[in-house]
Every structure is written in structure tokens, then in C-alpha cells.
Image (cartoon, rainbow, N blue to C red; front, side, top):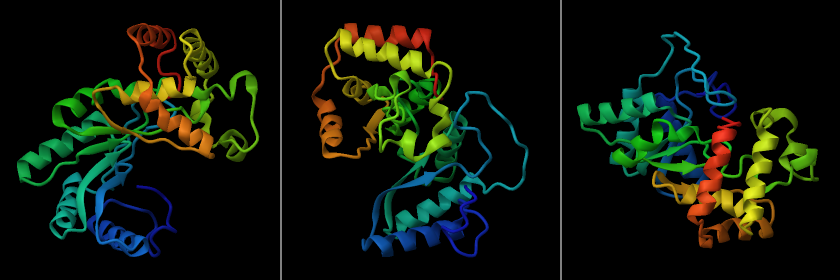
Length: 258
């Protein structure tokens, strides 16, 4: 759900109702010139939810929410029509995910198979609650922002703002990566990588990859050099000593950028 009314003309906001979901998938198939989508992600829950820049729960009472069952039935109809094979969630909570699981069992309709949430060395909040759901219910995490908006590369340490980076291009859009403990946490992880003679960016990505609840890690790059380094993370092996040092940093600077 969002207020981006330009995405679907005639609608004041995007919603996860059957009408808008059908419009969205048909437009996507037409624009991409394909006949189906392998995994269709539901970006953001329809209900009000605090996701970025905090771990606190801010409850908003409202009746203006598309029922999760309606969204699921829309997904089921798309699967039956052959337009999608599976579907997943994004920026969802443990409660929300559990509702999808419960309703799928009750109404005998497909449940989501993925959840696309932020996960990195500076935001391990997914491990509280959702990680166990991912493993036991086989709803794998598609971890986005594994480098914490690029901070875990170390390129912003000391207040640096290299030309062409998101810190320069997007200004204050990523304030969640500018908390009081961002710099000391990133510096500590950078020192861990240096101590073990490994690349800090590759260490950060590989830490995500090796988690049992992670199905895939979503990487981004603005150059072939960055892309190659990110992909080569798969070949890095993190020893028990590296993991121990990483977890020690987490104990000191727990989730500075949720």
C-alpha cells in the first residue's frame, strides 16, 4: 500500500485488493512481454505499519484495510490462471506472515513462499521471530540491503561521501542508515574484516547467504567491479572465529539501522 497514485491511474493509492492486483499483473506481463511471473512479490502490507527507522510497534486502529484473505484469494486466482507460479511478501511482520499461513491452511489456498525484508549486519531484526517462521514454514527470506545501503563497504566511514553514491544522489532519503551507532558499528565490522584479511563487503553479503532462513540475497551495483565483487562473495568462507567476532559486534551495537 502506498500513496503513489501515478502507478495505477484512476486510483488515489495502491492497494492489495483483487481489482488492483489484477490490473498490476496484466500490465506487468504486457510491459515485460512475458506470459507469467515466477514469484510475484506483494510490496508492503496493506495495513499501516512501522517498518523503517525503528523497532517500536506503533498501532494504528483503522477499518480501511484490505483483508489478507482477499489478497490471498487474488494470488490464488493468478496461480490458477497461470499468470504467476508463486507469490511472496515484502516488509512483512511475524504477525502478518502468520496470518497468511493460518488462512492458507483454513481455506486451502496457496501460502507465500518468500518474504523480502531488509537484513544485514547492521539490521538483524529479522532474526527475532521471523527467522524461525522462515525455516519451519519454508518461507525463505529474500534479503535486501545486505550492505546496509552501501555503508558496510566502509566507503562512508569518516563522513566520506564519494561522488555518484546514494548518499550524494538521494540526500536524506536513507536517514535510517544515519543513526548514532551506524558509524561505530560499521567501523567495528570493518575492523573484523581487516583482522581476518577479507573484504568487508563480501563478509557482509556472505554473512547473509549462510543463514538457514535466507533463500537469496538481493545485491545492487553501479559498476561491473562492484557486481563482480558482490557475486564473488559466494566463494568466501566465514570461519567460526569470524562469526564470533561478528556476533560480538552485534552485542555491542545491536541493530543500529532497523
